[in-house]
Amino acid sequence: MHTPHWRPQLHFSPRQHWINDPNGLVWHAGEYHLFYQYNPQGDTWGHMSWGHAVSTDLLHWEELPVAIPEDTDWMIFSGSVVVDHAHTSGFGDGVEAPMVAIYTGHAQQSDADGLHRQNQQLAWSTDRGRSWHKYPGNPVLDLGSGGFRDPKVFWHAPSSRWVMLVSMADEGYLRFFTSADLTRWAPASDCRIDLPGCRVWECPDLTRLPVAGEPDAWLLKFDVFHGHPGGGSGALGVVGDFDGERFTPRQAPQWLDGGMDFYAAIAFGAMPPRDSRCVWLGWMLSHHYGKATPTQPWRGAMTVPRELGLSRIDGQLHVVQQPARELLVSRGAPWTCPAAALPGGRSVLTASLSAPGSDRAVQAWDLRIEVDAQQANGWSLGLRVGGGEITRVGVDRARGELFIDRRHSGVDPGIGGFAGVRRLPWHGARDERVTLRILLDASSVEVFSSDGAAVLTETIYPREDSRGVVLESDAAVVLHRLTAWPLQVPARAPAP
Ligand code: FRU
Image 1 (cartoon, rainbow, N blue to C red):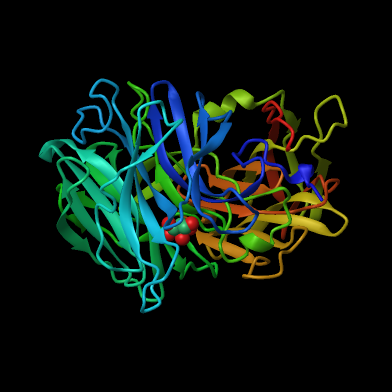
Image 2: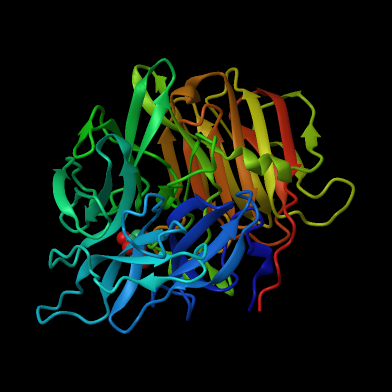
């Protein structure tokens, strides 16, 4: 049974089959490339290959044929893409700068000791990523390990070298290597961070970010399969310094998303000329229940591209994220709820999200709500409300937290702790007046605090006609404004 009413409008999802991590994000020759972990044969994890989509505006994605397919020996796990403008690798004809993919090969067969070996391999393309040549000298790095994956490669200008950051997944640390030509790699340093309970480290990334009025800092990010406070997997960020060989933390790690469906994010390795933003996106699902989610004929989507920054808040550098500004162009004429003083209680405001001037169901909305809590200890906005279904997004002032509650959000995959309340400390949550921005798509909710320091991402699978909105609070509140822009991204080609 197909489920078009859950098809993301604003977010990339494949026409059919399973996806997980974004891979090889890069802008090159007028196009943003989104490669991703893809099963070309089915709607659960397996046969991992690199799928491919391109965009000229970060909003509309065109799905292309599989870029790098698995072969009889290796599955193609996560990794990155660089554009070798200086022709250090010698790949190609020496005229067209090759795109070089650095990915993990995961052995199809196990060794005598039962281990599926993981090593780092290369492929290159000189036709804007449409066709790829696997490097005959693969692998370029092999430690004989079964937990050695997800290389992130970037050019480090001060040392005129390529740097690779890669995860020792099972041992729970990261390793740096350097290279002059992308084929011969030398060990540079190990990066160990004490994180009790955080197991299986994956998908590292390292990005230099500006800080207002201070020297730049580096953000090291990696994901842990187990250990997120919400009960599943999640992304951790560590702010520090990088000298081309070694990362030195300045602060304790911070969770980068309080929800369950933000994983394996990586930043675009190159952006268009004169665009100095750091933009990243993640996989908007979880391995803990992804295989049981009810969407058909696809499973998995990406988050919206997010602009990434660092802000000093209460003495600490905080990672801040906001939806990429490109998304604003998809806003249609807004629906607004006038300012009002509302008594406390359930459903103090009720409304229904449908397109202005019609009853056509709009699947994607950009909501902005500003509430003055006054005496209230907490308030929440209920979304996709109807027939016993509700997804609550709110502020717990006493605990100083933002939360999302999908215990009654619709279809529950029934495994992996899907149904639950996820909470994230946010310094602004104790304030009386709070503004939240919520991107609501056909089967997802992304919540951004006004300063971007707190983000919650979760998938939901409500009934098509659950379209209500309610505001609830434990005492009188003032609603300063609630604005809902329908997001009118042109429809996708119908699924085959
Ligand atoms: C993270 C991950 C990566 C791996 C890929 C395989 O979701 O497990 O560590 O490379 O997915 O699909």
